[in-house]
Length: 441
Ligand code: ASP
Image (cartoon, rainbow, N blue to C red; front, top):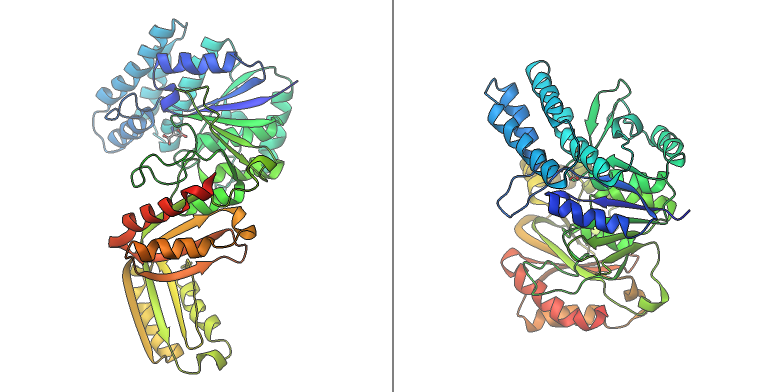
């Protein structure tokens, strides 16, 4: 039997009309057997996600405030869905359970998880699919990490006996049965776990965009949709701020070689983005996959004559950062100079200590810090086989009159990273995009 796991995000299930669209997608292909659902998200830009209302309710209860208005809002969101979908569902008793929970020993994760729980039960009733409670099949260890062995064993055994199921995203349970959630956006992770446990051919992640974009649309006008991207390229772009999936969602399916397809519930005919282990031959000649960037970096610059012959200098330098629990982004070096590029917020927490230790432990000739830097990554596996990519990036920046502060290319030749001043960031990104767009086809 063909199997596809479909996960629908909050905007795809925010109202009865959105749920109808999702149901149509599910019913249009019998292979779409396992459905992972988020809590109802925003119906409009100014709306509030049900998950946020649940956290608010929890905070009101623990602060000793009246939570009844917020609980009523939550009830209203679900009531509208139930009424419009005309499903038979005893919402009042579920809301009473929540009220009791809030009055006795409220638990933030339990409260937050009820958005997914209730929405999935309603959707299961509407589709006529059985409901599987994630608390019974997704297990966390006592240290809070996913218990992979238990989860995959239990979930596989459960799903193998079923033709179809709706499973709530975002939560599971600790060994003692207490509900625990993933971090925000965690239904993506549940989707990946279900796809792997059910040995799905594909993990479809339905959202409100037609795939991953090759640049941030707030900066670049109508960037191209990426048709195929490898897991590795995705990681590079996500790390630099391009967000499309929860970062922990890749690894369960990647291990099993299951591709992820990002699709748009509001435009189901759009093919979306395929996230795969290796690119198909049809896109094999593409040089650049996407461009992403972030502000908020600092560079600590160190100079010392004869640094190159001082054995262990770099090790001592990096140990200072490690002992403060800090990881750095880049560490470009010259013969007698070296810089450490690091996220400014993390650096600031230990700034004086680090600078003091660099001065005393390493006795450099010069130490200086430059703040307000941005990093831009140009990512594409095709770079390895093509000439002139770096030249294009640098001449685009030259023509845009942007000063490059640092250049780095990972040894995998998967990306070129440049650092520019924050005030040049948007302009630099747009200029690079314009110069590289032709290489994205
Ligand atoms: N509802 C949760 C959140 O808002 C989880 C999810 O949608 O993935 O973060």
